[in-house]
Length: 370
Ligand code: NPG
Image 1 (cartoon, rainbow, N blue to C red):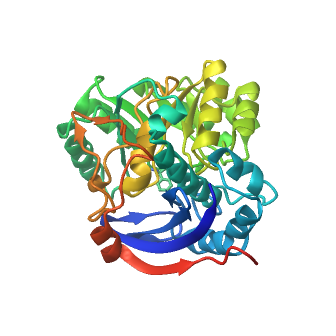
Image 2: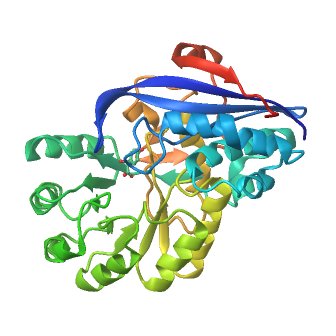
């Protein structure tokens, strides 16, 4: 395969309800898309980075900059591209995993389309459908939370992830458990908002038998997570802490994780995500597929990953129509909280030209030579 051109495209997709992160409230999901053009056809990648660098250090402007100035020229210099060759070609650049993942995804899409092979087959998926859960943000009241959870359950989802933070933990979790009973698979996500000193507050969640407590402590605190795991009964799950298969292996060896959330962007791509899965599976650590409010393009690809055998818990893979008012592809559809795994050649979805045009803010062709 010969690389002929790489295009970076900025798109904006409106959220139904503004997304509030630690830094800002955003009403639009800004996304950087990568399109690679090769002599064997084209491929699309989606960068998971959001507008602000608060989930990790990556953000859309930064991702576009590093793709334009460093990643694309480095890949172009490395010779004919192949999906397995992208990560080694870019290894000299530290970090920027979401940007690297987007470029790898585009090459993978082109390669799979040329081979007539699906991402599910390429990654080793063993199921044709996956179970999805939904995530519920921190609302302004417990009553609003109960409405949000009730609406998700009415749609057929059986797993709900509640966001928690110091001061918003035991009360909302208790309220949801009491209202909806033990049949709901409940989990809590703290995005690193607690410290080990808060272990007693987190142990107070034990009576509500959550399926897992996600990323309670800051990403770098693996030793703290291992200690916390000895002080609470709820299984500790890592998200932000796991950035590669190596970091997953370290976390597992330290006893810092009983469960791991796998997000392809966070770990540098779908191929590394499979390696994280493999490390965890070999150690008996369950994994599930996380979500980052992706468009249907990446969300379709995530379904293939979520269909691997070690993905034993429902993922944040509900259709983008739950949170976005517009999409770039024909949307994946959920029935009773389950979604079919795409089996078409490529990463699983075709970009709709009209939808793409409506969402596009800017397009640039990247110079392949410096
Ligand atoms: O994509 O369905 C979804 C939302 C899942 O809440 C969700 N993800 O911390 O895991 C998380 C959170 C997130 C959202 C993280 C956006 C990063 C960006």
